[in-house]
Image (tube, rainbow, N blue to C red; front, side, top):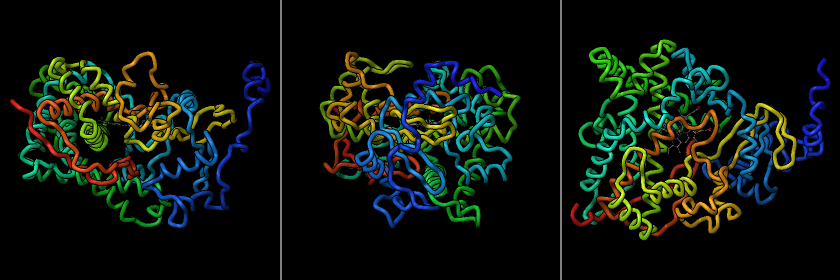
Length: 481
Ligand code: HEM
């Protein structure tokens, strides 16, 4: 019997006992069996693509913390950055998010291993250790020159893609080709030549990735029909995963040959691949799968952020001009980007994060907004709404990068967490930042970027948040370029 454990620390008990009960957390009344799921169905007021509007509405009705039940699964929505911090403080050694069961099921059956993204627990931890190398700045910087060359080619190849009015249509598609080429350098140790020659293969990969994310989102948000029969979404997951794995097998084999021929050069040029290929604790299939996860993780969000940053530059020509002037004087170099450009990236991610929120199944009891929330509860930080609240950001809808520069009034550290936080934070964060800064700098140095319409673009949920409609820009080549 261990009855005294909790009470020995009087402070903990006093705190915990004086707070309100979990059952008292406000929220819409759940129905038997379906809970609150109808709210987000065609019968209800909200829908999945505009899920965040629904969450914002619930916040207006119920306040900073809201209890919601989707089917049988209760969850707690958080709208206060102090609670986001508490959520991460209670994530435990193996931070858990809701799993992608359809993907997990397919990978387990086909490859007998599931990777990082869909999994939780000790197996997640074992696999995750192998990609921590991505977060080492020195390692990321060692790819600087090769990724800079990709950024230069990307910027140069935009001009031939403009029409007679200088307009480049649906920019995000071009940005995906850039992010694909840039992440290929890391994951496959080679140029795929997506920007010039190898257009068909790259197009197929970009399309497969978009389809994959959409299908994954459908299996995640909808009832698990795939458990009963192979639904269309499940089949798309199968075929797109097979395509990505086939590529990984082919390119990793090429990399193995390079490693064999000249290990020292390979280590210097491709430290991430070298680290992976020389890892005796992983099977060949696990290596292929990890490369596939890095590769796929590296396409969508990076391309979207490049696009949204240019969208803000096009609407804020003074800021674009200031970034240009800065770049002329203070050139980018490994580990250095002018503070204004860095702040523009943070501000873009604040206004247009690509993740619909950040969630954890907490590993210990927590106090959230004054309520006792038991361990094992799914807690969802609705960060895209918090990062647009005037309580934490003055004039929140205005693109104002200086708010991240003025050290006297820096924002709350948990009010904008676009890469997540803690042990399960995005492992590709440093790589993504490097790729985005390089790509944007090359474009701004070569072109003035103008808007084509003054319509506001918003983000819709398609597993990740993506622009609600195609974004076009008018590019004007700068004098002397
Ligand atoms: C602007 C670009 C990117 C954004 C905004 C982004 C954002 C995120 C977020 C919010 C998470 C969840 C973190 C959490 O739960 O705390 C995540 C996870 C992940 N990201 Fe990224 N990401 C980006 C680029 C990349 C890149 C370039 C890679 C490639 C290496 C990548 C690979 C991954 C992987 C593998 C995970 C799963 C990590 C895990 O579950 O342990 N991401 N990302």
